[in-house]
Image (cartoon, rainbow, N blue to C red):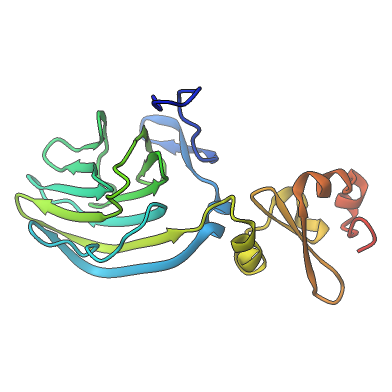
Length: 239
């Protein structure tokens, strides 16, 4: 990727989890966003039993620049299901069973008659995961600042959508927002599970015996949590 006027190129992608799966074609790796990313979700827009067709956009009233989108639909042969993310298209072509994002393209066959997509929209990137991480398309983008819109439609027919979830995201760098949601939405970090702390993007949440929670840099928390404390389940640093 190229970023005009910046002293760097290439793309820093979101953290992912790799898992190994048995398939008819042998062992295959899948990659999916880490669960901790869900701690950045704020307002959600949800639909079920929706039908996508040309000329109609259920996302018309949603505006923003940071989103986590999940959709599961039943492709119909000959249709092209399209998602417009700030002017950039993610398209599933049912005739060729291909998924495309910008100039990137890959084969993606339906599973049990459905396609599941998770699309993460950042200010300079779109990352698309297909069918629970079977395929992955990362793309650098430079959207127009005036275009903060989302869209979803279907050409050459219509498709049935089992569910469509659009999550607005908070910035990972906004400490104030993270403090407001860390305790209620954080996912436990396996390394710290027995130490009574929750990890949220470099911030450790520690709960004392009274249930009160405090935040500290994760690096500091790790430095103060020795192996014996984690193994025995004792809370570190006087908890």
